[in-house]
Image (cartoon, rainbow, N blue to C red; front, side, top):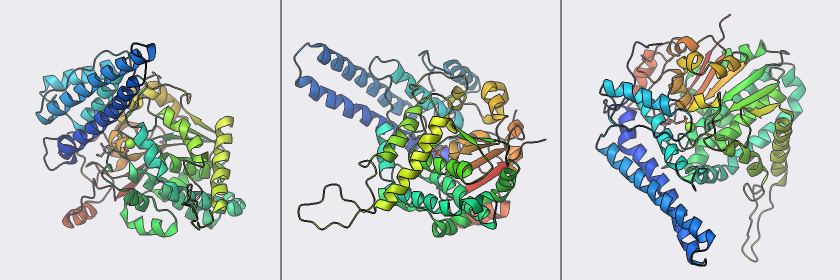
Length: 489
Ligand code: F6P
Ligand code: MG
């Protein structure tokens, strides 16, 4: 499929792609460098406590040296980026997609678009994460290292307030379960609340919000009716009602819902909540499959390891202390009582998810124990550079599987860029036109907060009015799109 518009790239200095190459990628690379440096430093300290020449010391020394090698590559890449050097071939590291990236790169070379400031943004950004993976893969001691893992975990840890609030909302739904199941007037209202919670869960990805304080993040995560209502005007395309009507057609069909996941931590938590709502409180879905990434991807995307650690994190009293509790109160201090009922609501809900996972009601598309960099005929597609209009051709196996789905939910910004090919569609282009030949293959729902230039399905007048206000509405993460495309009969 060849779209009639060019891809976004950094030759447009006003575009977000340019800002990305100039400042966002260098910052992400510096963060990776620092993560490696910190481990190298700790290992060096540890070596000093060990007997000279013992096996453990030797292994640690080798690890430190390999770490230094990776640090050198990162520094060199930052320099290359800043001076507009060509993207280099991905070394043959035995992992998936090397040839796919290199062949595409070769094509770009012939078009003289293979440099950091000329390559299409979507390709270059996917390439960047695959290249970084190859550096760790080619070591002996860093193959299973995810440079973003600590950051994903620590941000998740600071989401406690919103997590307890959502657990309470879900608990309150129990009282209305029969009514909800019978599709009362209330069902659509609650559905809207749930889908929006899952939508705004995407506002806090780490690749964009590295500069945000924990307080800023808590504000973005605020849930509940009032917060949703306040954000309603920020949903620029709103197909919620159409999705609901579609879900109703799935009644009693044992439908499976697929989530093509985006970010770990709080966003994944909201995906679980939405999945739980569909399975537990409606008669429209009986099974949910979650699709992760198999390499560290766009900083915060879910890997099988992230997925596997989510439930234990949520059940850990130290990871999410009961609201109101003080773990180490200063001596003699009078501390408010912990709100233990909220804590028990979270436990109840997460224990249900655990049961769903054990029974196969919820499942990850690959085993949870899948190590970083393992290859999987289906999952590999999600870390390719391909737009999703190539799904049938280039991701045939996963395409066939998704054809059986009752609804495929694509979470987040990058999935939206891949659905629309990240090309400069006029803003009023219908969503089903912009996603090309994948339209109609299966029911598609995209839940995306806007963090990149491409936007479709919005009227030109609305776009002009936002531009006139000087709002960076395409990229600042404050606006969102709920886009639905049904399966064609
Ligand atoms: O441009 C912002 C950005 O980092 C893009 O690189 C990428 O498309 C996106 O955000 C990642 O966001 P999300 O996690 O929502 O896909
Ligand atoms: Mg992401």
